[in-house]
Length: 180
Image 1 (tube, rainbow, N blue to C red):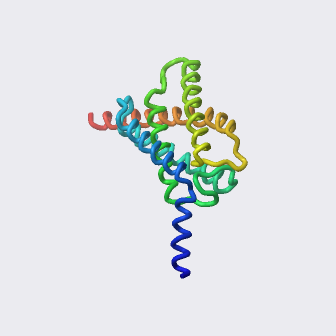
Image 2: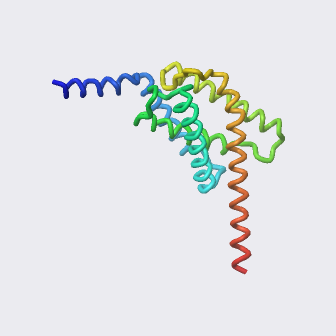
Image 3: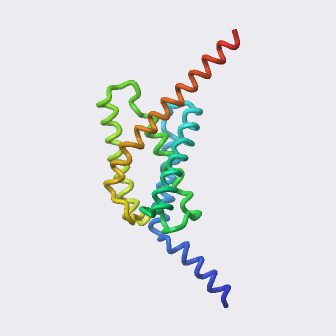
């Protein structure tokens, strides 16, 4: 009988995440994957690859500190990172690629600031609904903290891509000078 209780309890834990939260997470993850694949790319494959892994690493560091260490917010279930959390990854990948793909490199600071502000606006809408559906839950974190964090994180993504491009150009120049 004990085994049946454990099976039932595990089943409730999966459902305890909330069907709405899981559906929202899965549907939006699929949408981000689809849009990221379908959008015409201005980025090279290596830029997408390098910037995506940098963004995922940054997200991991932020989540370890704010989610696990400080317990300010969490995805789906408190105090755990479970399999369902893996569905968050396509969202971060999609945001990174879409943000950088249309970032106005070479434009004025006010245009770049406006672009970042628009991206933050859409990110806040997504985050608001993530909270409403129970995908993301807050303890100490406040929604307006995200606005401040995004004004730091989005420019950091653009700066990282600038650095990646610098390294690629340096590599190209080095390789071309070695072949002469």
